Length: 476
Image (cartoon, rainbow, N blue to C red; front, side, top):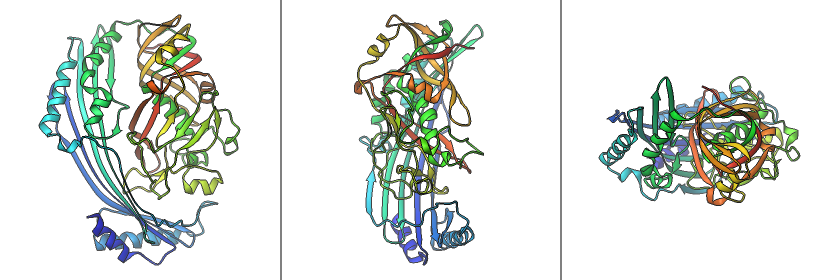
């Protein structure tokens, strides 16, 4: 199919400064067993293409689900018309065309293809997990799910370039809500667990052994006291660090947002262009990389959706802000170095600056080593709620599960843990970063941005981290 679409595109390619076609086929499946009852199988297949034309200083996009001769011809004609309308009306610094001539293929890892696991076996695994979650009559709601995605994308340049990328994603999830005497507590597994891979992802995440632990922790939370309050140290597990990195580093560093493109929808950023190279974002322990080369991480790729080759780059090094998350277009506008992160959520959206794999590089030591440095504090896991202001600066986050820390030892479970801060001040309080042995890969499919909205997959890999003097509070 893709080869025939490519032949049509090359026959139809117009005489303009630059023309590309990005084709995508996506297959998705969602399976759920909730309260021991199988839900309906949800399956989706989507195929289409996006034509982009740059000509005489103008830019035009046109998407089509009809990749036949007439459908492509119509999309090309619409893109040409839009490019003519936008000529001499583009934002200052908008770059000219950059044709690419590479012919490369990248395939993400999948050691045990998910497609060969029989549907009956997938449902059996979910049914078994669901039954094992009901460990107590106080478990009022429970369930298990698999979400799998197959994606193949071809990016074609009329000048002869071709980039083919193929991926399979899998996310297993579990949940258990416990209720008694007017109190309800929920514990989850896998909300930040989407990865590139097949059935091996289940073993990587420990899906088979998780149900009883998830349910037991929900019951523990029912019986636990509220989280202590006040200024104290906190240790954040990797599955909470994911959100902390995402909201207070990833989004503020998106260059189109810094340039004002998101201000009427998803907010701006407290970061300004003059900060790069000098601004102290965090303590010396803070090292953040853009790294689409971590193969199993959910936002891995060889090229972004404008054909720029992806390379590992430091965004923050030894606490100093180094470069933004800006693709080729934003780099030209801002005259700043960036990264290969122009990405689109689907064939019917144009690429914009997005997070990809944004990782906090490991330091030294174990979780016990981090806890051992705390005289009084709280250890927190798994995000439950989040709030951050329009400039991605002041934030307040809540977690599902926590344990008190006293004199370097983990204590009992506490419920309703929350903390708040201001982005740069919070990261400057970083005083411990776990080592490679506790470095964990995570990912989410739900990062939203842009008008019309685009939800993309974003990866974060991080060890647990220790922060000092954080404002901690409990709640209902």
